[in-house]
Length: 302
Image 1 (cartoon, rainbow, N blue to C red):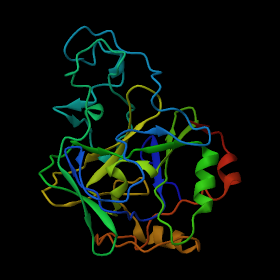
Image 2: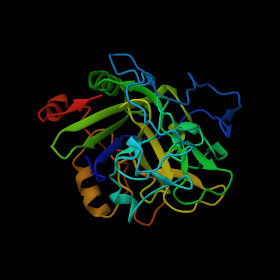
Image 3: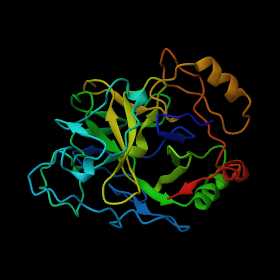
């Protein structure tokens, strides 16, 4: 099942569980079994794009900070206001392309259009939950609209993402996320991210049907998007951080979702988010299990 968020859809299939890892403003410490930590995307096996390649032109602003009236990176308007993402109306309807100033830009490092690239700004901690394996929580107050963390991992081709998914057993945890961006001409651009073997603290985020984070694709140096998670409300210290794996800001019709999920006999798992509008099952996307279904339409894969 794919659900649109404006121009984006993204879907994750299973609950996250992993070995404990602690972070304090990006500094990690603990004795844990973790394949490899990376704060940024890395090129995966199977011919996926290289996210480290600088392919976007920079702005020519010779100032300490950029403004939408003069900056080419802000063609779609200001992205941030006091480090908070600019959302007009409901976060569910957020669909504006976000391009930050990059390494090719002439503006200063303190430019207000440089937020995601600065990394973690809040203290976060991985902890053991009662029913969901490991989870991620904040150790200090996070204002609404502030950037919290990325969901970073290996950037895969469609074929490699399918191969990895189809090798999983029912007992395996899945971390692969598929982001589908819809263009006005009907084309769809896909990005597949897998932090199973290489990833950051975002891999510990659990699903919630009423999450406190929402995801926005943000581009900095290349067209490979950083999957940035922002606070959709003020978040008090020691709250578990979560987002909706189906790509929606809120589950508005759990009855319909449950009916659809009952038709899927493969890999459905119960949801333990505890929200009042809980859909009872984790979101499920069958597209990576059935190649022909997805390839039947025009898709551009990063």
